[in-house]
Image (cartoon, rainbow, N blue to C red; front, side, top):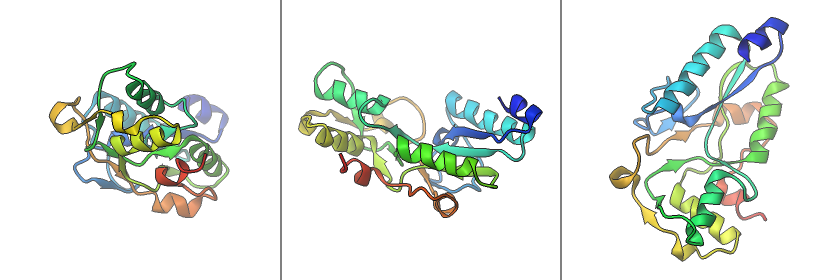
Length: 189
């Protein structure tokens, strides 16, 4: 995609992930160097490097958990756990900055129409655990929040970063779209 964009001098907005970070620093702004600990994170970091080399004017937008109006992977997981259709747990120590899909899309359009280039963090304003996010989803959707299974990723979960908080201060100053936190957008339905 970067090669095609470069060939026709098209504007490129490449969507990346907070998975490029290990979680060792917890708070990450746009100047932080990727230090992935998973193959997925390494692939995302490599893609960022390639995009920067091929299209220096591109925007690289790192985001976090994307939440919608019921059909995102995390929302579906919460529904399956709450209804007993799936086993597993929601981790209390796995923290991210979830963003609503409409906020993400609007911010990406803002960046595409701007003169900015380079890395931008586009995530929600709240740093919350996957368990707290699950509780918010369950309450919003009328599910039994008390039945959601709880666990700690550090003790039982797959390897990977535990606490990755994207600092979006720079990006928020550059886009019209307000990057709402999950506690806000989950309450508005």
